[in-house]
Image (tube, rainbow, N blue to C red; front, side, top):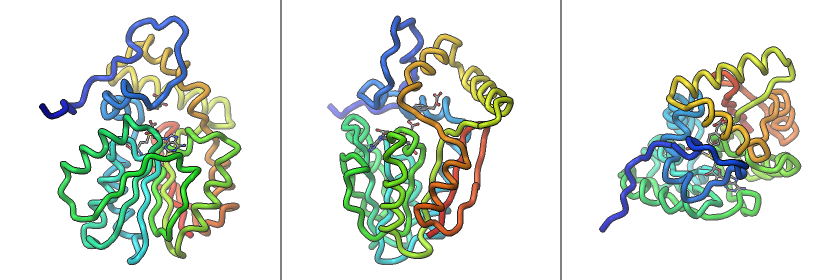
Length: 248
Ligand SMILES: Nc1ncnc2c1ncn2[C@@H]1O[C@H](C[S@+](CC[C@H]([NH3+])C(=O)[O-])CC(=O)[O-])[C@@H](O)[C@H]1O
Ligand SMILES: O=C(O)C(=O)Cc1ccccc1
């Protein structure tokens, strides 16, 4: 019998867990991931279809498009649809969670766009990058240890052709305590409006505390500039979630 991949409701934090374990991209998260990310990340459902337009505009022939931290492939498929006119292009989608990639493979096979997608189970910090014109980090850099982020972005920049684009979507924090408090409250309102209870919100907060490390918009801008990107544009923000494009 074929696997049941119908999206499941995220109830991972609905019951009191006692000590809340650190968040991990395991089988239980993979099973509910589409529902979890849609109900937890303000703007996610707006950002995904825009990746198609961005990939379409910036892709250059004879280069690779990367989706780093592809999860179940929502961002990968958006990029793939942006490259419909380039069936000879190649997308390399990378994630270090086996559970995520297994389900991702299923979604890629269901989709019928022509561009080939290579799925790779690896830490994005241990990849030999090929010449690229489109690199997507859609809510992935935030899970990479802080001390590794600058070197990774510099390496990605080095692998890119001039005019190539890196899309960086992240949860951010504000240095301004009033802004930080206002945006955090609005994010919690968003989660509550999407059916999460106060217990779910608070247990998830504990789970991600040491796993998802947000930086400020200015930290990201400085790092991208130092990594060699010549133009950096904030093209989207909803509460404390942003997306930037950085052009080499
Ligand atoms: N070092 C690493 N190496 C490889 N993958 C990693 C690493 N660290 C974390 N991941 C992977 O990065 C993904 C982050 S989710 C991306 C959503 C997707 N882009 C989407 O547009 O749907 C965002 C979120 O959950 O907020 C997970 O699948 C991790 O396994
Ligand atoms: O749920 C949250 O509070 C978040 O900040 C976003 C999120 C989404 C999916 C996995 C981990 C964090």
